[in-house]
Amino acid sequence: MPSSFDAFADFRMTGHKVIITGGAQNIGAGIARTLAGAGARVMIADLNGDLAEKTAAEIAAETGSDCRGMACDVTKSEQIDAVVAATVAAFGGVSTLVNNVGWGGRHDDPTAIPDDAFIASYKLNTISAYRMSMACLPHLLKEKNPSITNSGSFSSAAPAYDILAYGTAKAALNQMMVSIAHLLAKKVRVNSILIGTVMTPGYADAGIDPAMQEKLRNPDNLTGRPGSPQDVANAFLWLCSPAAGWVSGQTINVHGGGGVVRLFGS
Image 1 (cartoon, rainbow, N blue to C red):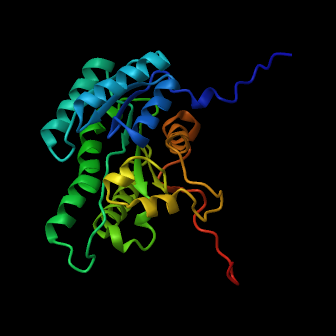
Image 2: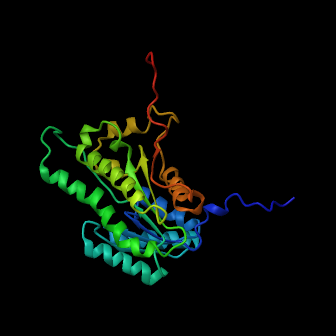
Image 3: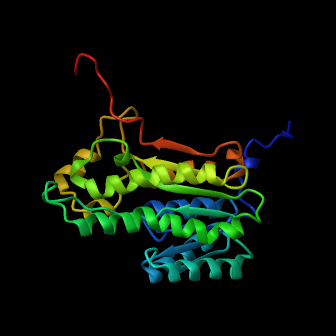
């Protein structure tokens, strides 16, 4: 007997107009693909404009949704404004912002991190999300299910001295976005996802050596495996979609449950 109840209806993104930063590859591309697959129109904004366009074309061909890409250095306000303007021109507005862009390398000597490294990390991982959010805000306020969802990091909530500049910038992002959720209460939903170990080429780019990468592939977490971009994208789909219409101001762990705790050791 056919069902008259569609349990997935609220997860569909038809009519939504998305900007995702850092969406040309890795986790960001997975999020863009998943939101487009749910029916959203998606603008990928990435420092690598050529790759953003290529990824967008592949997603459009696979999903049938309108997906576009363009270059954007999120540390430059004029380029943020250009992305928002292009999205409004193409899609008629912005309903959904995913602040995904972020990066941080290992420190050779965590006791001698230069000021410039902290400042650069804060500009990329924290300030850029604020600037993009505020640039989108006038358009978000016109939409039915407006949301801002951020890619945070588990390193922001756990000791991580080897990536100290990155972890502290992401910790600042957590506080900022909870505050913005209260600032925009009853107007725009704002949430963040603290992402754990997801094996992508980005680990090598960040200076993680092969031995450590192999260890990360076999984590001692509650699920017994590292995450995939799709694991993270599924969480973003929930938070961006009407299915999470009663969820705001939250910082949610998506990290395989974290490390296994054994009171008496292994």
